[in-house]
Image (tube, rainbow, N blue to C red; front, side, top):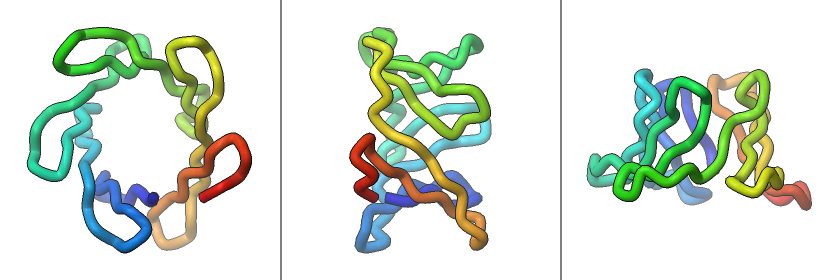
Length: 90
């Protein structure tokens, strides 16, 4: 998956599957709000208000609610980024 400079989340085929807005809302491809980042940097489920995890320092890592590191983000020169799991799989 990649996230471009506009916040569009695209799968490996280039299909837009979601969007991260400038105000930290996460929407699916239909525009439905599914999650958001709160002021403390926690990722919160929009439906249940349950904390699902938080971003690491610098916004390059993400931790789940148990504190495990499920993925890392690496910037690319074309203003997109790649997302890698803990095994290094893109």
